[in-house]
Amino acid sequence: MDRRASIVSAVFFRLCLGGLSATVAAGMACAGAAIANAQSLPTSMAQAYQVSPQLNAARAQQRATDEGVPQALAGYRPQIIGSLSAGLAAVRNLLPDNTIETATLRPWTIGVTVTQNLFNGFKTANSVRVAEAQVMSGRETLRNTGQGVLLDAVTAYMNVLANQTLVESQRLALQFYTETLAVTQRRLAAGDVTPTDTAQAQARLARAKADLNAAEVQLAVSQALFEQVIGSPPGKLEAAQPIDRLLPHSREQAIEISSKEHPVILGAMFDVDVAEWTIHVAESSLFPQLNAVGNVSRNVQTDTTLGTTRTDQASIVGQLNVPIYDGGLAASQTRQAKETATQSRLVLEQVRNQTRTAVVSAWVTSEGAKIALAASEAEVSAATLALQGVQREAQGGQRTTVDVLNAQGDLMSARARLIGAQRDRIIASYTLLSAIGHLDVKTLNLNTPDYLPEAHYHQVRDAWGGLRTPSGR
Figure 1: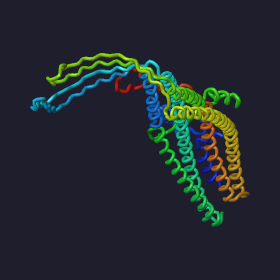
Figure 2: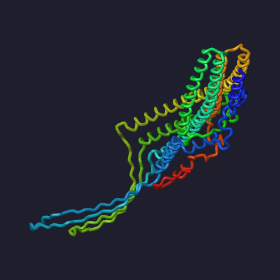
Figure 3: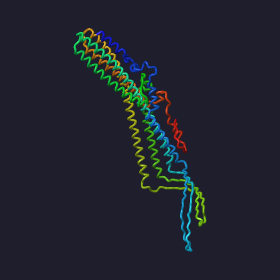
C-alpha cells in the first residue's frame, strides 16, 4: 500500500489542475505554462477577425450595399446618350418620261441627347434616404457578424484548451491505473489480495483507455473546428481569463445597454427607416414627372435629288408627364410598402424582446457558471482529500482495492467537471458581452486594425464614374 500511495502522490500532484482553489486560468494553463510563445486567446481572436471568410464575405456585402447610395444619387445627375446610325439604301425612281433612275445612298445620323430630371415626385431624394438607411442597417449587421465570429473564436479556443487539459488528465489517470494494476498483481502473487481485486483494476484500466480515446477524439474534433474558425491549427494554448471587468454590474444594466447599443436592435431600427422611406418612393409614381431634354444632331443624306444634303439640329425642350391611370400599379405598390413598414415595426419589437431574452439568458448563465466553477473546485478538493483518506485506510486494511479505485474514479469525474466549468465560465463571460453588443475589437483592445466600413462608403458615395473597386480600408 505504500507503493500505491506513492504512485497516487506522484500522479495527481503532477496535474496542473491540482490547485483546489485556483483561478480559472490556473486550472487550464498547465498544458502550455512552460511554453514561452504559447498562443493566447486575444491573439486567436485577432487572427479570426482578420481571416474569417464569413466576416470578409459580410464586409464585401456591406461594400456592395454602399453602392446603393451613388446609384440613388445618380437620379440627380444628367443622363447623356450618344447615338450613331449609318447604312445603305438602294433607290429606284421612275421619272415622268418613263425612264428609270437608280442610286445607292449612304445616309448617316449622329446625335447627343442630354436628359436632366427636374422633378420626379421626390423619388430621387427618398431613394437616397432609403439607400443611406440600408447602409446604416448593413453596418449594424456587419458589426453583429463580427461579434459572432469573435464568440466562435472564443468557443473554439476554449474547447481546444479544455480538451487538451482533459487528455493530459486522462493520460495521467491511465498511468495511475496501470501502476495500480501492477501493484495489485504483485500483491495477488504475494497472497495479499484476491483475483477479484485484479479484475477490478483491469476493468478500471480498460475504462481509462476508453476515456482517453474519447478525449483524444474530442480533442481532434475541436482542433479541426479551431483551424476552421481561427485559420490555423492550434499549438500550445495559454490560459484564458474571464472578462468580468467589461461586463455590466447588474442584469438591469445589461438589459438597458443592450436595448440601446446592440447591433441587431439598431439594425432593425434602420430597417424601419428603410420601410418608411420606401413608402414615399412608391408614392412618387403618382406625381408628375418633369424633364429637360437637350439634343444635338447631324443628319447627312447622299441623295443628290434632294434640296438638302445635311441637316444640323439643336434643341432643348421641357417634358411634362402626368400619370392619369396606370392600371392601379402605383397604388398597389404604395399599399404594399405601407404593409412592409408595419411588418418592420413589428419585427423591431420582436427583436427587442429576443435580445432582452438573450441578455437575461446570458446573465443567468454567466452567474450560474461562477457557482458551478466554485462547486467544482470544492468537489475536486473534497475528492482529493477523500482519495488520500481511502489510501491511508487501505494501508491499515480498512479499505479494499475497489474503494481506492472508486475514490480515484470520483476524483477524475470531479476534475473533468472542473475542466468543463472553467471552460463554461470564460465562454459565458464573452457570451454576455456579446449579448449586450460590446464584443468587438475596440472593447477587447485586440491587437488588430479595426475594419471601418465608413471608409469605403466615403470612397464611393460621390463617385460619378469608374469601374475599379476601392479597397475600403
